[in-house]
Length: 119
Image 1: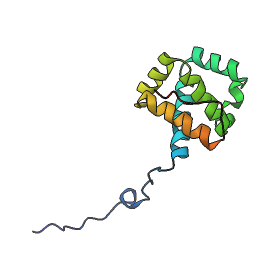
Image 2: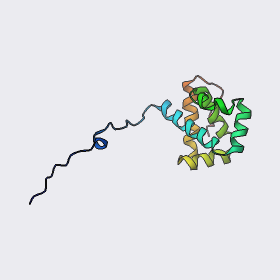
Image 3: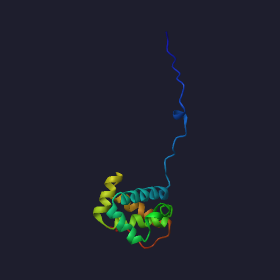
Image 4: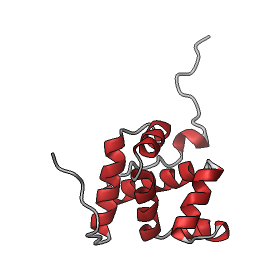
């Protein structure tokens, strides 16, 4: 007996495919949200970040929707080599990608306060 070559596709197989992100600002915001998750994963680091930004733990989730807040997250992570290296490792990124995300987001928001070092 011959088996049918045609199988019924499940809903999962025919569902919408997630579109890859190509907008540099969206990518930068995703990196910043990953950085926020990294900061929040260690209570001591989170406490320091909250103290420096003035954001309370109860407003952290809402603040994450603000691109300027996300910029401050990247600034916090980038200010210390050990922190940026630990985050980059956790996020499976190269540290320069973290700096690039900060640059893209800062440029998109018109933030002239930060320049990357050029050798």
